Length: 150
Image (cartoon, rainbow, N blue to C red):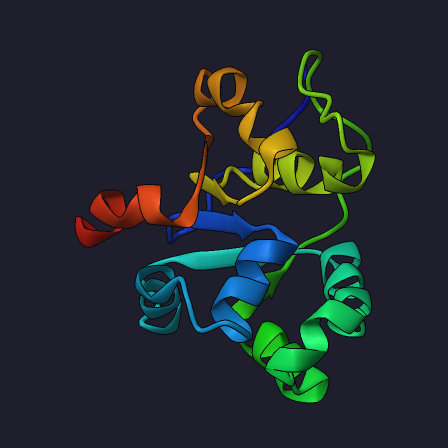
């Protein structure tokens, strides 16, 4: 059985790239953003997540929203709690069908996060299995009630 880190002082959340874009480009996820900005919730991230966000900001379909990559990345750096890159999948049966998304699950479990917020179907399919390990994988709108209690 792997050794998991002790939980952080604040409840932890991992945001996948689309959730970060939802917050920092499309101005969604306001309840999550407020909880992070008010230090009621700790946003856990690692370098590959930032790298993916940086690559994604250059995608042509995002151009019509005119994201400011420097500002988005500065906000990422300001509010995220940098964590070490998890080494490999931590638990059997938690392999994401999208290999690029595996890091989100692995980091959330390694850091004892309470939530992984995503729009991604491949990650959402893991919700039942991760729930048994204390990690809720959910869409941004599904976590509103839980966050109000913080």
